[in-house]
Image (tube, rainbow, N blue to C red; front, side):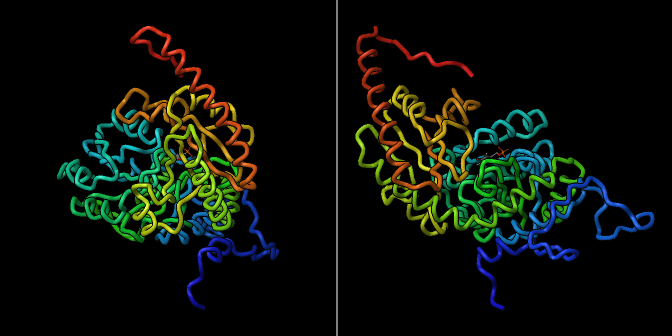
Length: 412
Ligand SMILES: *Cc1c(COP(=O)(O)O)cnc(C)c1O
């Protein structure tokens, strides 16, 4: 048989019917431990579910196949996956080059958990390969960490270019592939060493499970196979995905291709519509021809994804918009079948507020779901009416206020 395609792999890899009963869907092995036929005589290789569990194994096999990796590891959340991976490959004294425009929680992990452990980092503009190379500290930089498309500005970075910079420094390139998902982008094929996911997002796809994953290529780092390093960290650190969560992630992953097609089609319609609307100052979506990363995205991705960010000209306009949608739920997170809106500067990215990594205060991020797109556009239209009104009111107020007046925002 020829090499199976993405959707065939998504449905069958690691998901064979149950050999005992013929159940088409393998059972959820809701067990902590496995009875032994003699001391250390294991019936199917499983001893204790922190080490291995058939439901988790099935999901790991399925995801690794889709990313084209040698092995996959499932964790309790995306951040648990990032933490296990980084503590597995890093040593105190190491340095990370970190894409500046990324998930706020990654920044918090690297600065507040790994910082005190003696790991430093330099944040860089992900679109400037010269700046990436200049940030490398020879002999100290062990990891380059990249998120593309980035969150929430949707910048596009050249994964192959980042890989060349990393490998010239004997460092690992780790790509957070959460936004694109393996359906739209396979970083290992572009030269990355490791892929991480928050499976909470597109892979789970239904906003009903928290999870994370690491997929490694077949290779070594610091004299040890990457798969062995991450596998040991998963077992010894213990932040594993449970059987129910692994089942939900595996179930979601089967329809990833179908969902990403619809997310992408709806997002493009929303982006093109938003470009025509008064009150929308900028539409950030890599599928638009005028996006600075459009050509690169078209080359290294198989589509542009379901996230669209809008700049609405003022904080007041953005806040009013985010609080006025009816179908789009005001919420952190993304990648589910239902549409969500987020006011990032005070929600997902509150931890980098006031730093050089702060998100623009007039930005809202849309996770465009798979509903009927005309209904979504109608909802966004009425929210824009509220947004424009709030923007005008704020402008009148600041014109009347004494010089130096600043909007006071609530703290988090
Ligand atoms: C949500 C997210 C994470 C963190 O994942 P959790 O499952 O919330 O721990 C990491 N990276 C990106 C890009 C994310 O969107």
